Length: 134
Image (cartoon, rainbow, N blue to C red; front, side, top):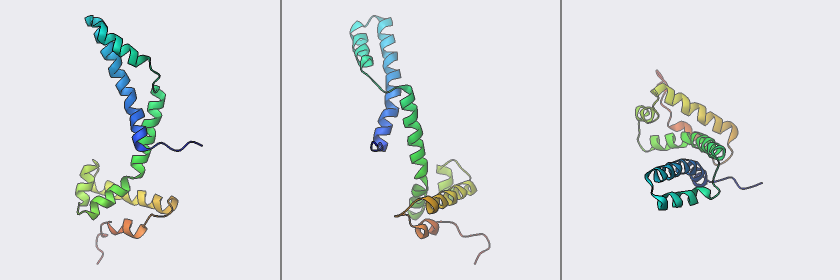
């Protein structure tokens, strides 16, 4: 089984598809303007085997999954660094309650499915106190 790709490798795959789209536009514009040298250079780059749009899509999906899977850690680290729950919510374009609920759900998943080195006490230490508790 091949080694899983790093985030950098996945991002490179994802970016290559948009780069190819820009290169195709450069090629078309160069032909239309009569710039044969530029059109030839673009055609040569386009002729090299590249990532397919489907491979790019798969890379995008995997990037998104990995980034979302680790969002809880970024939330915890920001809170440990003195960010507030309101700031955390704003950064995620969520309400405060949605941000807290997302974090609680995410650390619950970590408790169920992640092995070491997950520290549930550290993860829960940044949760806001319950309303009305002493």
